[in-house]
Image (cartoon, rainbow, N blue to C red; front, side, top):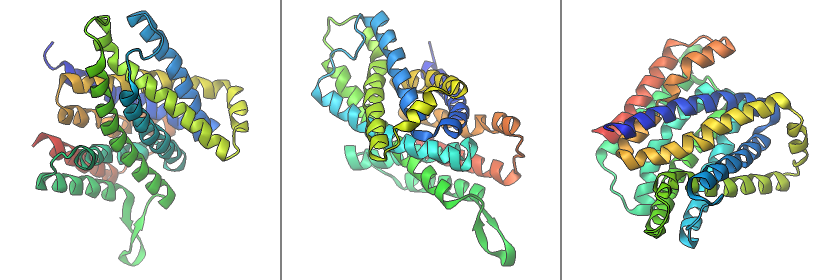
Length: 311
């Protein structure tokens, strides 16, 4: 099918929109750490079932130590650091602005590709990053009294949003390296479905490591008691189930699949449309008015993402 990668990328953007809306609700009810642990445990279970049905093994078969190391690193950076920042960002400033900061993920991925893989960064890349940052600035800055520039959002939320974009971008590069190595060690006599389900197997490795990382983080903070409270919150668990299905199970796996059928640039640009898709449902759910400045900021940020990859 022509444009399969582009179609998958748009589905990912819609999937992440649903994820962001329900992650916002779940994090506010149960806390960022319990929500992340619950969703990654659920994701591991769902992915194990998918692999069991598809390739006959409920675990990522054929993965060697190198693939595990790269994917584990991507889980620690993308999930434990990046998603910890993102979910706390939702609690602080909401999913609408949290997703705006995620437009930084593609530029961060390009910088990580330069630092880790030796990929080239052009002047165009610098321009695109400047445009993306300008779009975010338009959304979060305003003029106060005496024409002084002030933040419209809490500094804590802004820093968490920046951390989320950084973690997502670097984690994507690490996961791409891990998945490419994983694909190279799959034997020729492996089940035919293994090629299609390789992203799901890679995601399961990341989910298991990420869940363990969050659990260690919670133990270090002596907050494991929060898990017991979360386990009795039926509505919160319902939110966690939905964000799990549309996040780690479908969204992340399909995002890894998308880059196999189209260029990483086109896929990243289309998947970065979530800040656009989330505006209307978020405003409707929380009865918030969308300001013209915020719409302009999103449009400028998206232009930066497009410049980064498509020119």
